[in-house]
Length: 132
Image (cartoon, rainbow, N blue to C red):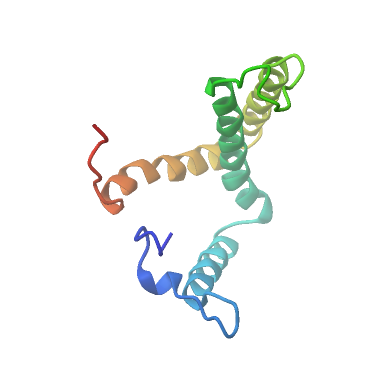
């Protein structure tokens, strides 16, 4: 993301000799240490797993809106499409509901952090002209 100018360049510097990104590693370790100090393992999971499951569901839902290739295109066509995706999305919704019921505070705080990324992206991302 630093190479795409979404983070400071220093975080994206790559040390070819060691095969690492020291700035990115330090940032990630700092965030991980702060999380460990701020909560238990269950709380940390409660913050991040629902968000990851939600975005997994969004990825699956994107398949529903993609155009299907023609039957003669020589590609694999999933049987009973879109039923497997709908069943998967139903299970994702169930998992998220279980998190909301079981760990409402952590789940809602995690969702708040994720939604804070929307206004943050308006500040950080460069404005690109819309394709005409």
